[in-house]
Structure formats: C-alpha cells, structure tokens
Image (tube, rainbow, N blue to C red; front, top):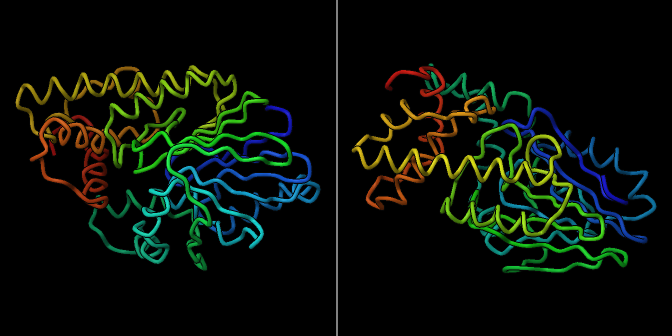
Length: 308
C-alpha cells in the first residue's frame, strides 16, 4: 500500500465490519484502531506479529469513540500508549456497553427492530470486553514520531461523532480516515453538523494522499472522498427541499431520491441523516436516541417505498 504501511480490512464494511491500520518505523510501530470484539482483534494482532515483533507497537490512535474501532483496546500491552482526541475519550464513556450489545443480540425488540439488529450484530462476540480508555488526548492536531517516522493525527470532527480523527502518513502518501469515510456503504451522522463533514472531506482531499483507507469498505483514493462528499451534498439538497415543502421526516425518508447512492450498503441510514439535517434546519425537531433511529431505519428497510 505504502512503504511499511498496511491496512487491515473487514468485508463487507457494514455494521461493525471496520478497518484498521499499521504504520511501522525503525523499531516502533503505530496501530490505527482496534476492532469490534476480542476474537477479531486477536486475529488482527496475530497477523501483524511478523511486523510488530521487529517493530513493537508503541502507539495506537483511535479515530473515534464507536466500539467497532475501540473494543479491542484491552489486548494492547501496557507499553502501548493509546491516543485519541479529547472528545473521543469523553464519548467512549457514553458508548453503548458491550453488555448492552450482547443484550440487543437476544432481546425481543419487536418484529421489525429485532431481526434488523440481529442481522447486523449476530456475528460478533461481545463477551469479555473491558473498555480501555486513551492514555493521551489532544485537541486539534498531533504529530507523533514512530521510529523516526512522522505521523500526523488531525481531528476533523465533529461530524460522524463528536471528534473524528484521521491519521496521515505523509512519506507514504497514505491517509487513514476512520468513519469520516465509508466506501460502498452509507455514512451515518451521529453528531454533525453535516456541513462540517463536507468541510472534513475538503480537508482530506487537500492532504493529497493517493491511498486512502476508510473506516469501512475497500481501500480507495481521492475519488472515494469525493463520493462521500457528493452523498452529503445530495442529501442536503433533498432534505432542504423536503423540509421547505413541509414534509415530515417520515415523508421525506419515504420519498427521497437517493440517485446513485441508492445501491450503497445500509441505505436505510438515510433516515438518521435526514433527521440530523431536519434538526439543523429546525432545532425544535425532537431529538431521537440511537434505538429510536434504528427502529425508524428498520421500518424504512422493511417498507422501502411506502410511508411508515
């Protein structure tokens, strides 16, 4: 991919199937994110051992707070300094716990939501996870020396979450984006504002990295960033027009034209994204929790072309 830079990819990039990365310097290396459960993270760390035995892990950077990028942290040795944006550390304390995720796998949440969540989370083993918090935090930007190699970490959030960090390896022309980038699957705005996500895309493009590793999906290049930017530009156009016509969130979601983005995996995330845009247009729009949004997404998935 780039000299002494590797990506660890989990197809198909849908819920929980996240990517990670490894950057090696002289006698040291840096990990970008862990994975959603301990078995997946153990498999990854084992596969990386031929590299990390020669260049031991000294740092791990967390792109954001979601469990599919942090749940394997406890498997990193005490000598590994975990680094994250300050807001990422704060959000990690508010994330849905592994015990709650285990409960979701078996709970009866109704005929629409239960199969929706079980389909997405059944493959993961949330047992034994003990959240490990970052050792070091930063605000906007940090440069790390990894065995004589410069690695830049930039917090471009809030967007997907309250803080979204990218890891840039300038000498290799590689950018790890975390969940600021989904390739072939639909991004989801948990925090926003959406305009800030578009601005983050512009910042990533300005870094001019020819190789881009998304948080979910296959390795891409600048065109992958442009595609996500295009999705959000299209979403804003569609949402603003629907809001101006007085359509409810349900009506907007049922009638939205997703155009070329309709074939992206997890297209139902448009519901959460429309909700975020409606709240930006009218702050009086009621806030919805994650399970409420996922219920609406499950219903959208079940009906696709009709009102809820």
